[in-house]
Image (tube, rainbow, N blue to C red; front, top):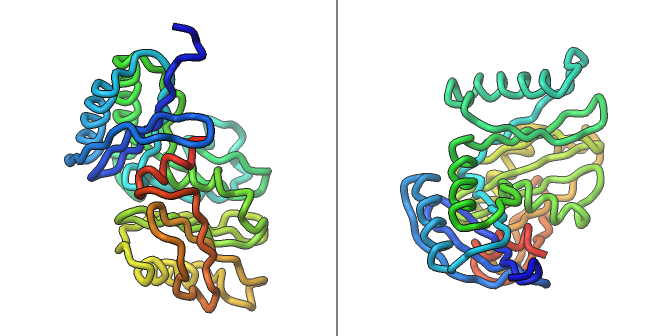
Length: 265
């Protein structure tokens, strides 16, 4: 088998459903999906079964994690931090302050930013990452990357966002994750359980804007509000702080197929 014939898969792991897609030029084609339960462990079991059924032998696997399986935190700038190791320790202490000792078992990724600017930290259970690595190896695949959906969607849609002042919301089933930026710097990151209606998402965004003051005209230019809702038909969203949100879409299909498009080109 030549390298050109190797398969490239994208898996989307969510609490109630796992979807496996075969990546190809121009997007990703669904292979199979499976309902699941039992948190990330149940989702990993379902993925292992789907890869076995797909007959995966050689190739690559990219995993998109629902934001149900990730945690996020804004890291303020500190002049006292002088190395990547100190930055990770600072981030880990912050997660442990919020979530307790369980955060000691999380793997962290921190956004690169210019000196003096806040950073966004994402945390995923190390045991989940190790399980995914084991599943990929067992299927003869190379695990290329594991990305929380919020970060994958932001990376893909970032060219379409306003540069300095914006609210970016990713409304996947049962959860809404938000990135807020003001004056070109991160202001807030939050992920919360949320109803699937447009009104529920707008109410959550309204509350976050009020908490951060980003919608206050006295604080500076009003932000542009963006909502990316995988699997949801494009339409008008209720105003947030008097601002009409712009819907950002990546494609058609159900929510989990749409989530795969954040990493499938």
